[in-house]
Length: 299
Image (cartoon, helix red, strand yellow):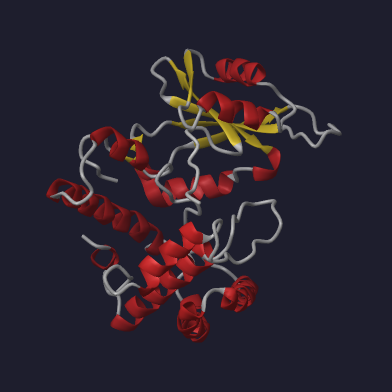
């Protein structure tokens, strides 16, 4: 049975979001216009757990209303701004909209105002340019994007964060537990999982850095004309071959922990490993392509 793809509807997405909140879209729009004088336009593709609008005389701000359980930590936003500079917005928390005492399971919203980064999403760029994915032009654009993403992550690498041993121990225990669960994947993945179990001490000795946990095609913003966002190794400089190999192992670990489990959203039940069935087949194809297929796997 072929998968069914549902066309995204902004209106339906917004309606679904506000079915979970103690505030209405009209109340949010009114609050946005109180905070930022000028025009107001809903963002074309909304997040699952937030409602966002462009606001201001030149639509130069974003006002975002987030479910309270998914608070955007201002200290993390400030850290991102310091490390990533123009790649991260300047974020300010304003207030809460809606009541905490609702008994229907609906949530209040936390209100943020942030500077707008003028760009289009990676997905919108690809859809609007209709460039064949096997063409030289597409390869050149993709090289530009990958180079800039390397620079993006290099900024975090060059600003490692201090964490205590308890934090690293907690990560180790979680990774060990989840890798054991992943032995439920088809046997062709088991040698990779066993190798990662042995690599965990080296992986956890790498610098702890700021990361983006939802770095997907809808959240990568690119220049509409150039596709802009050296290699990572060139950007950070001075990496030993051993460190590079450990980074490669961490990359494989990240793919397995991401694609090897069903949906992993915050405030949801613990994720379970995927199966080689209709619901897990898409992620299984990713794992086969990136980890096993000699023509396409990580090297």
